[in-house]
Image (cartoon, rainbow, N blue to C red; front, top):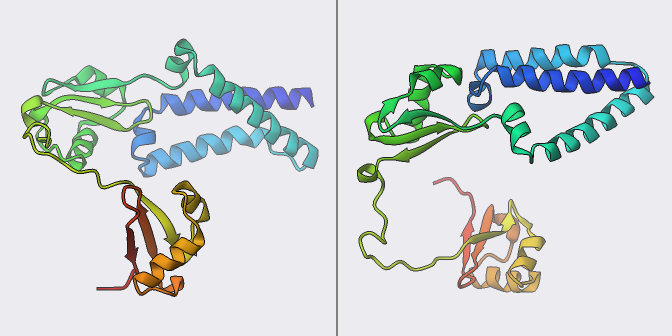
Length: 223
């Protein structure tokens, strides 16, 4: 049993290291070869610990659960976090590609260009910084003169519209959300009746804004 537990923990850490070595692109895009690679790594890693013994199986699951929780705690330390999780990588700086960093991230240039285009930046010269995060996602900081203009910069006053909180999803009342806005089902029934929707089964989605408690209703009907 101790040998089995030790083997399980060892394979767990080896799997993490191998998947990390595959590069951030494996997490960001999950292309066919990325997905196949991760699948085969996990399958091969779990092969030696697969057992028909029910007790061993439960023990393995419990061990991995505790190891994962402990591992997550250890990630609070910066030195270990950089090793196992990674650190942000700058791939565009002041409108110029950082070729060395791009190569180390395992992103191809075409993949990077595709990612920044999807974020609305077809011209990399307008990007101040593009950073590949440890999760594989790309954060973009546009140059100041290319950043979207805000109402504050134009001295335009804006009003708060509140956060839409769903109260009905596919005909089902979201009781927890009603409690969040200090309302009950009776209040909801009255609001639905007032809006000529006595039957909530007809409602695909309904939400309430937390500023004035106005009800927004969508029946999901084709238009």
